[in-house]
Length: 396
Image 1 (cartoon, one colour):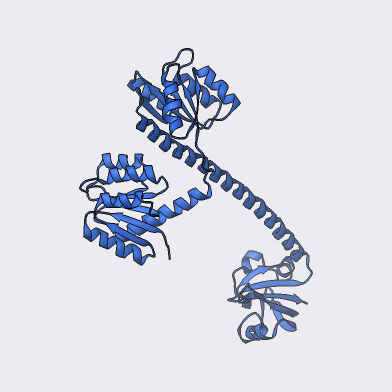
Image 2 (cartoon, helix red, strand yellow):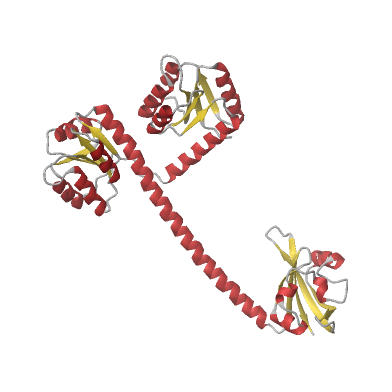
């Protein structure tokens, strides 16, 4: 059973019933409400839901309002938007507030189940590589009083650790002393402006989220800021809700990038480990083949269908074949006898009674000559003791 708790908010009873029946059958615990206010109250009361599925068009509060309030109160909740009226604006808005997915009506139950499964897989991966929970360290760079307002007012009231630098050069000096997760820099400053600061941060290869703020916005400076790697571009006077929401979204993005780098590094380490292990296995295989080829006896291994899987150099030289002429061929190509321990009743006896020895067989060379040989044989078994073939050793 899946066990995750899902809340469905949709003003259509038929949608609520469909989702509850579908998701309950998949093993989820599902509650449904047809009123967005009631749904939000459940979340605000702290009822432990893992996933929220909400419609967009609803009376009183629409789905986007539900999304924003739910994310503000429960940042970790997975939210999936469902709607019969898709639009570019709502898709963008849903993405901005970190909705996991956006599904259009009429609903396909399989699509909903697959979406939820992907969401839970993504959460599992995210938690596995999650950066330890702690507030981001923020550096505010501004030569004006707004820096004090930001750091001592808005940011510290929200529990963030915030420090101030009065110009770009001072900000770079701070970076040489300690790490900051987020930089909020004014665009217009004497000496080194916000764009120049971004350039220098990029040169230092510092993993920091940069937000540009300005009282004199322009298309040109916005484009240049984003081109230089800014996460966002906001205008003064600073709206507290806007800056806090920008920091929260930005820090989630920053953590995701950190986690992605950790995952890629781990995958690279695993890849290198596999390469090293494969190289070691190849060396072991080549060494084993060298030993087998140096053996003066004939060695042949077959699969469960009595086809030749391996044969040593002694056998090919004695019988006049090339390896490629024998591999994959029936064992009958080597012997005059139709009956041998590699197949049939003698093979069944081998499995029951164990290895055989002094088993007479007549080998046939590629020119049709006959050579009297004596063989020993043993079954090849897998971990479950199932027969996967036979290995035989013959002597003239």
